[in-house]
Image (cartoon, rainbow over the protein chains, first blue to last red):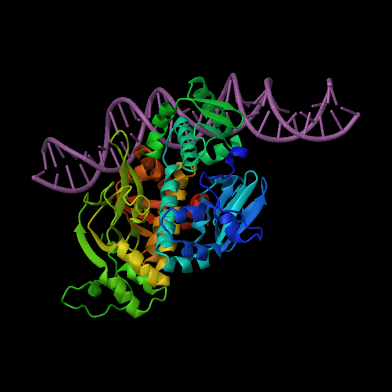
Length: 251
Length: 251
DNA sequence: CGCGCATTTGATTTCACTCAAGTGGTGTGG
DNA sequence: CCACACCACTTGAGTGAAATCAAATGCGCG
């Protein structure tokens, strides 16, 4: 999982030893995202005062719990989390996965409660942002406000993705391509993936039976589109995968 | 479709005859929503300057087109719209329906383009809000900003609804209950529904074949849960429908 | 009245699920 | 170091819900 640690290529400022938020925030995905949108340094200072670095969480740890009062959103710094709900039978339904650099908790704004659990899939480090403070700050920082709007809007579209009625192959291809792209956007390898989630979690997310996931992966492997070894995936025939995924991802 | 015209129970101010935005905005759902969140009168004035009342549109009219530059969101004042995309085969996929009082276009923020078409299902009147101006205003009006955040967050959760793998009956029940609740929230009848969309549109939205929609409606009718006459639906056994829909709607 | 279209009904097929039985890797304890 | 157990995963056989294919019905409108 070493490959998933967030390691920006850009030079980091010399770390201070007083453990203040600023020390880590240069490596914090969310702050970076804001930076890259042209926020000035002093504005970033304001943002940093409401950042809290939390973790490490370990596999199975519940970071936010469904029904809890909404207080904060969080950016994943390292590791992977899943969002889940429990259905009537007590079975877990996986709603999504969040990779380093991605922001979780935005869907809690509406009801002022978290509508789902956020669970660590491996060792996870987070940046926690108090949302009330953030909203206050957003009113003063157009760039931050715009960024939040964009993140929210993006999640609407992301949520609509897995809604279509696609074949198991298409869903799986879309899942792999989506993760590859999201890794690529953060500077990780986009052809060799080390996935943190189990087959069961994948199946659950893709609304397939675990057996079907297994069979689909076999078909894709036999067709030379991917190579799989446990949780290591190689995307061998990217064009073919993209073609399969295209109806799902729409781009 | 008379039943779908937006008719607030609260007394309307005497209409002016100069046709300015204010005249209608007291009946405009979006402004009302803001009002109900405690925005003061002067703030509402600011909001009104960026409102534009557009329409009427007629069945099949495309209000926003996929790929067009994002300039504005819109609140439905009267009538019903659907959001759609075209798949690779040129077939239409229905993403959602928007009833009077609901806001469409928020998912365009992310890419600064509309990710889907917005199409009138019947005679439609809209309030158009310039989004850049609105964002500017939101910075000055915490209540408006909060409202926008909430609307966006709500759409994330709404989009996640139709994602699960539910039976045709469950999906249909959830669809009907959802619409009934949304009508109820606007003060319309929630047991007698006059739906603006065709069976094909419903099927398309629910990811079912039109034939399946037909069969499901028959089963629900034979079971006494609903009565259907063309596009008029009576919800006869609300508890049973709620029970069917519960796993989908989760509440 | 008769055409065109949306909807319904019927017969068959298919894809993914379920049930059931392996396989393989990991970790533990002897 | 090996044997065993546990777990995640894979593979196989049969089932089922919804899709597809095909045809009939019924409503709206000229």
